Amino acid sequence: MKLQNMPKRTLFSLFVLSVLFFLQGFTLSVNNNIEKNPLQIFLLNSETSIQGDLPDWVLLDPDKDGYEGVRTNEFYKFLKTLNPVPQRTDVTVAVIDSGFDINHEDLKDNIWKNESELYGISGVDDDNNGYTDDFYGWNFLGTKYNASLEVTREYYRLKNLGTDETDFYFKKVKKEFEDKRDEIISTQEGVSETLSEYINAENVLKTKNITSDPKKLMEISEGLKGKYQDAASMILGIYMLFGTDKNDLIELDDEYKLKSKVLFDSLDLDTETENTLLEKNYGNNNVLEETEIHGTHVSGIIGSKKTGQAPFVKIMCLRAVPNQGDERDKDVGNAIRYAVDNGASIINMSAGKYFSPHPDFVVDAIKYAEDNNVLFVVSAGNEGEDITEIVNFPRKYLYENGNKKYFSNMIVVGASTWMKQWNDEKDPENENSKYDLAASFSNYSDEVVDVFAPGARINSTAPGNKYKIISGTSMAAPVVSGIAAVLKSYYPQLSAAQLKESILSGARQYENLKVKIKGKPYKMLFSELSKSGGVADLIGAFIKAGELAAIQN
Image (cartoon, rainbow, N blue to C red; front, top):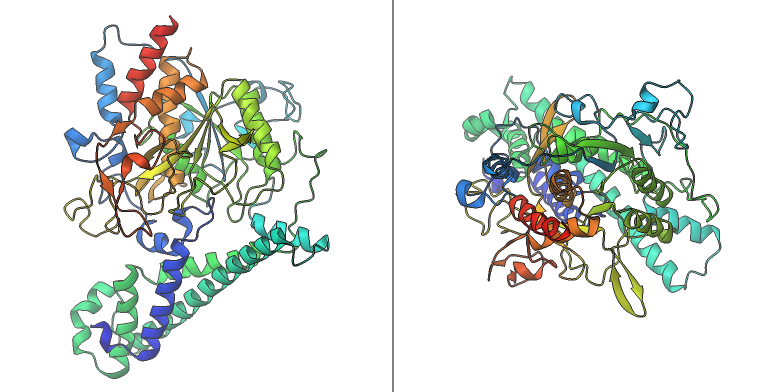
C-alpha cells in the first residue's frame, strides 16, 4: 500500500506524530535517556535474545570482529597469556539508578551483600553505618516511583516566592517549563490519536476477518477496496514509519499519560533546606524493581555474567533516580556518601538534569568521594549538543578564579556506535540513521566529555531474566565503570585519578576520522569530541594501568 493512497486524515495524523517524535527524540533531558523517547521505543527498545540482530558488539574487537567494541573478549584471552596470570581482588561498584532486579539469573551472584545486616538482627543497624537492614544497598526514594521534573519544582518554587515575572532567571525557568509541558502533552495527544485510529482500523478489518498483521497486510493490501483499503493504509503507515504495532502504541500511550500527570505536578516540590540535606536512614531498604528496566540494564553492562565488562564485580544497589522525572539533589548526594562509606571503589551514575536547587550538596559529595579515592563515572547526556558552555548536573566542573577546575575522580562519558563510518553492511536497517562513530544523540565537548564508549543498541539485562537492546549515554557510562572495575581488581593500589588516567590515555584513537554530528552541515573530527579523543578500550587501559602500577612499585 503506497502512502500517497492514504486518506488525508490518516496522513495528517501520521505526519503530526512523526514530527512530534522527531522533536522529542532531540529534546531529552539528561536523565530521560534516549531509550525513553518515542522513537527509541519504536526502533530500539525491543526485547531481544543474546543472539539479536547485532552481536554483543560492546565486547568485540574492531580488527578481529569488525565492530568498534572495547575488546572485552580479547582482553580475557590476553590475560591467560600472561606469566604469571595476574590475580584479581574483590571490587564493588555502586550504581545510583532507578531500581534493580537483584534476582536476575545473570546478576544475582554479583549483587553486593552487606553481610553484617543480612546475618544480623532484623530492625537493628548491626554495622552502625546509620542504615537499618541495608542488605544490598539503599532505596533513598522509599515508596516513591515517579517525580516531577526539576524545572517544574523550580518553577513553582519561584512562583510561590512571588518572584517578579520579569526576572531573567524566572523567565528562563518558565520558558523551559512551558516548552517541556507543551512537548509532552502534544506527544501524548498525538500518540493517543494514532492509537485510536489504529484500533478503529483494526476493527474495520475484523468485520471482514481481514488480518491486521502488518506483514500479512502488505501481501493483500493492494487488493482491498474502500474503507478496508483505508484501514490497511493506516496500519501499514504506522508500521512503515515506525516499525511498530498496537502493543507498542498502547505502551507509549500509557507512558505519556503518566508523564503528563507526574512531570508537571505543582504539589511535588523541593522543601529541603541546607540543614536537612545530609541525612541517613530515610527511604527504605527495598532496592528491587521488577518493571522499570534502567537500573538493571546499567548494572548488567558493568557486571552481568554474559554481557558485563567485569563479570566478577559486586554491584551495590542505590535507588535514587525515579522511574519518571528528575532525581533530587538530596538523594544523589546521600547516595554518593553511602557508596563511599560502605566500600565502593567506583560509582556509576547514568542520570542528570539541567536545573539543580542544591548543586553544592552534590559537589561536596563528589569531593568526598575524591578525598576517599572513589571514582565517579557519569553519562554526558543525550541532547546531541556541544556541552562546553552548557551546565548540567551533577556539575562536571567548578570555576576557581575564573578558570574551570575538573574533578580528578570524575569521568564524563559520551556514546559511540559500532561503526567508524556508517555503512549499510553493518547497518542494513539504518538503525543508526547514517551516523558514524559518534552516536547521534550523544553530547560532546573536548573540554567536558572525557571519553566515548559504546552506547548505541546495547544488549544487557532486563527484569525477569530477560535481555533488552537500549541506546543512550546511560549505557556508555557503565561500560567505562566496568572497565574501571577490571583495572581496580588487578591493580588495587591505583587511585581514582590513576584509574581515570589509565582509561583516558588508553583510549583507542582514530586519526583524521571525521564523523557526522547532529545539527552540523559538515563532519567533525572525532578526536575533537572529547578530552581523550578516543573510545574506551579495555586492553589499552589495562596496559596503561600496569605501567602506572609499575612506577608505584
